Image (tube, rainbow, N blue to C red; front, side):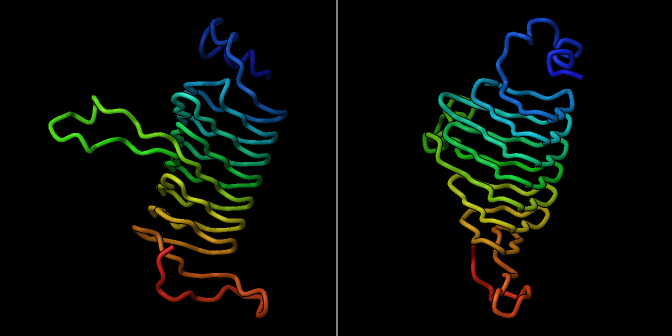
Length: 189
């Protein structure tokens, strides 16, 4: 079924005026909320689970590579740049952001304060994000990484690593000389 037909069926005729850049063979399960379709790029052969939310403010952008699978209840918030590589698997209830929410003004409700200026958050090719994990502002997760369920990633994770916890710590790293996944010392990401 064409995207235009899906949008017409689920959102009404007004939805046809949006310009979401979505490539061939991508499935977007409805309902799904995309606040700025013109600033969202979804590659080919992707699956986006229902109840996903792409929240973009200002000049923020969200780019999803080819052949990605994103589970239900995914939230991605951008005021800068969020990039998800190719062949990435994102489990249910994952949150990815490139911004924070201002809290410094004592006496003001967080509801009245703006999001901070966006940074840049990137997820490398062939990475797997476990159920319920949070990837925070200015984090770069490398190629072929695994982020454990319910982990909070606050700093970069190099290529070929497994990280878990709150805050996430590297627990395994691929050793190319030995051709095996070795346990990592208790270093923070």
